[in-house]
Length: 222
Image 1 (cartoon, rainbow, N blue to C red):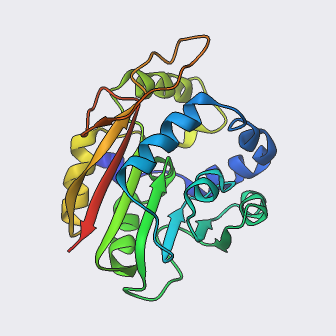
Image 2 (spheres, rainbow, N blue to C red):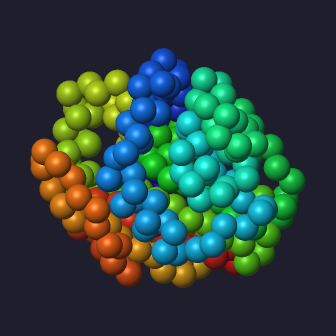
């Protein structure tokens, strides 16, 4: 198994996010990057009532998409998610407190890279999803210009990105397959440079393009 998928320090990452919960949440206000990412997510699926976001954070994506449940270990972020109408559950991705085969959709949006054991989280998602249920992952490919930018921030000790383990598209595809999912497709966005002073809206492109700064991948539980 690729080592990008079995390392991480989620307890410390959780504390780091919680310490700056309000600042982190404010980043989404009128941010074109958020709206680009949201548009890409909206392209791939309509949200089911039995949906869960793992690593829900402050609930911005769940609120906008209509995701019902949100799991996160950070209590401060969960309070913000609850204020946005998300049903919060304090738990780890590697130990989801849901019945087997009880959910229809599970979302990981920017959260997989912060997990202590990402492959175990994929296996756990497979366990609580119904057969035929959907796994939707939004992530930054490691070798894209955005991935390189965030990796540089990590090396410089960024308070959040220092806990991230970025991965490439092929590694993710391989591990999704091992976790008993079938790739259905996806969309890609953020082809603009992360160095721009002012970001613009983008129309998402169909397909999984590793040069994109944000990929939304959809897989079906076998």
